[in-house]
Length: 110
Length: 114
Image 1 (cartoon, chains in turn green, orange):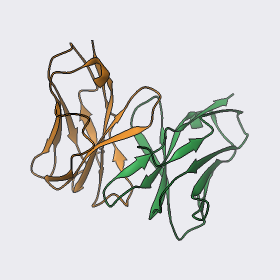
Image 2 (image 1 turned 120 degrees about the vertical axis):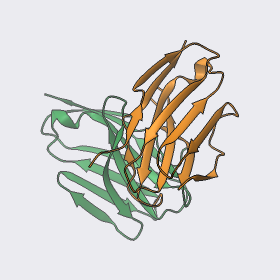
Image 3 (image 1 turned 30 degrees about the horizontal axis):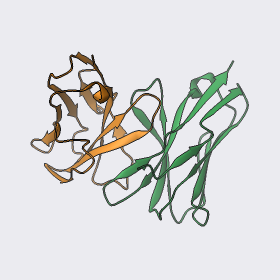
Image 4 (image 1 turned 120 degrees about the horizontal axis):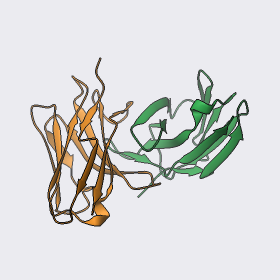
């Protein structure tokens, strides 16, 4: 079963615009991670936010975490064509298992 | 250094045949994971290795699926008597010690069962 659920399923934006996607989860977590996947191949880790953190930045990425609402958001600012990909949130479902959502597909139009 | 590698990149097989998928994790990473991703879907956890042992095999879809890891390094995922529903991308990942860390993914093996 999937713990994380991303919203929206798909997003299309113009180059230079910001893209925001959300992730909701069901059980308590130690941390939440965001990954990017290009062309259905391997995933690339973007950012990890711990349960005691509320916001984290990495370059053009900003992640927030609200443990009271069991939700997280990923913001990509000033999007580029290279940001076109699927984005997944992942939560530590147990001591050894990460649970991934179905992902948000982002298309950045030139 | 070298990342996680997987072979083959693509595999086409006939229904009923056995296939072996290989994963070479990052050197020194003790934790290794196998996932399956069907078209347009998220990742389905299959199995986790800590060293050579697999504490949890419950994610394996059926007894046709098995995995092993030797020498705390290379892992092989074997699917016996493949079925069409086994068609998917099989992804391997490794991390230094445990799941509460960044996982480094290989490029995946795209399996097509005809």
